[in-house]
Length: 417
Image (tube, rainbow, N blue to C red; front, side):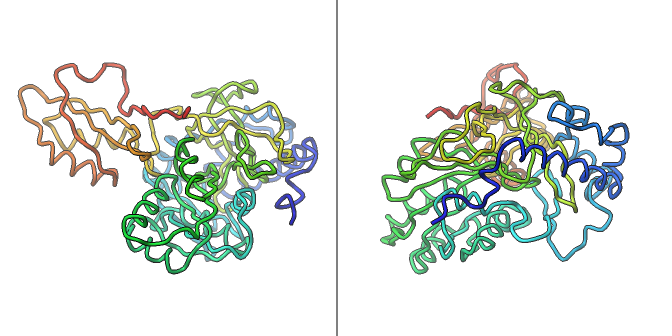
């Protein structure tokens, strides 16, 4: 059995870098010629002068909030799509809303090598519990698994009992989905007498895989690895394992993309090892994403991976550069809290608090009453569910009970363990 997915994973780093920058220069010219927004953003950039990572700072970072505004003002793609996006593929709408176009080709989101690094092999049956409805999440991993030679059950999200029954009958060897949902499935199976011991491997994304949860899965016979992905970029980085199958620190940057770490709010890269915002450049000809600021925090690791792959490693997901927060695989945005306040005039201030309860994400919404009004807790909870798609425990705070620190969303999860 081959130790690596393909030979690009072990190529000499300088050769990889030179090839990426050569490809980037050609791609920038094509992007400027095929989309109005990129023509504007790249108009003052001497593309031929881009020779190393430091030169990339001449191109402004495109942050998701800016992309959202462009799409609102010039729907649906804000002028960033190529002139001919209709190719028999798919378009998606992610929370925001932000619209995306699927790249062309087999394994368009570069997911297959993440499956390989997780110990999954052609012929495995994958239970894919990522969402298939409107967003690209399910398709990102589905396309990669099938291109790799796996068979996929497109289970989607929700309907836990039905998913457990299907998995007990089909006996998939691989779980694919958010970190928390596998525990929900395993617990439901234990409760209802279904056998899910066929699960031997897991590839998770859309949230943090906490060490305690990974250890619990291992104790139940499932080796779970994680990858870091986004709707616009596909799989950005993925975990690898040592010779015994144990996960190694950090995540390897995927081949065929460019990842930078910049100082939040700027276009400037930070020194290696310093925490900053993850910025990604992909080569999707239909929907170019050039220096896209993900809003996620991470840092480059200086040492190469002991697994033998030679690409750079990042330390994994380390929080958000803004207050936009991923909960149960979905982003919650401060704009959504603002929409809740707009609907409920009796509430003067609100703060959404994200914690962990029983190895799952939990949400609490603190609200302050306006004047002598009495907020309807049940109506506010219903609005929260309608706006975000997530349930939250609503609690009324006393006067000045919410700190005056500018936070609308407070992520209080402990990512250290």
